[in-house]
Length: 289
Image 1 (cartoon, rainbow, N blue to C red):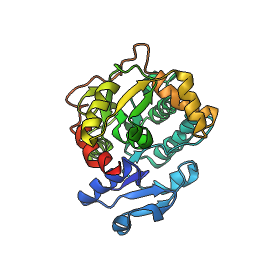
Image 2 (cartoon, rainbow, N blue to C red):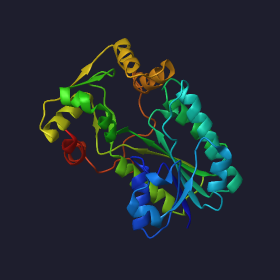
Image 3 (cartoon, rainbow, N blue to C red):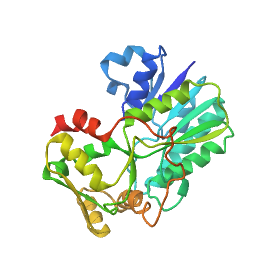
Image 4 (tube, rainbow, N blue to C red):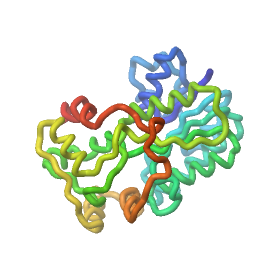
């Protein structure tokens, strides 16, 4: 079985690669700079230098592949949702032209709305493009990554995380390693076909009040969340040097969840994954502070 993995050095992709290696496979990994691979795995994978924005390169790199793990790369654009969709069109071309039997796409909670979710709208468009190929595709609609907290280390050190969602708004919180495990199970399984959508929701839904209490206990520091006005958050993002398009793309991922949004995939035994926020924060976040 030949499996191709995109973003193999990212929060999810690196775990996908490691799990495939432990399963005795030699995955093909697509990344812009193969030198970024961890030294211990470079001789155990087939690395191809590919920019996921380059359709011809993506098609060529996935020729002969049986299964594909596709994660749209980080986007810096004044139209992030549109850029995600354009990159997603490249994987659809590869699936169609190469007859890839199974594709596992890392999507997000909220992609089902298709509009009004900022950057996530681009993931919804990618879902549609993959569906249009008629190939077998599994869309993993994931919750809020634990690792998003790694981008807020300064705020955590200061003891206050600013958010725009109501503090009692519940969200699915999930460990990227658990997402990788779900993805690998779908990649290795050969007894499914057609279109599937699977939520990946972590062990429990948490609001920001609950999450910061859990993290505070794990890291041994006081921490709370504070809801701030949308425009104040926009100013903070602009102050970080982001363009207006990027600011609105990021804002939409939160504001799109307000006004009674309920994820299409309910929490079930299939969508629930095991790693708790407390254990992740103690093992990963605490040593960084």
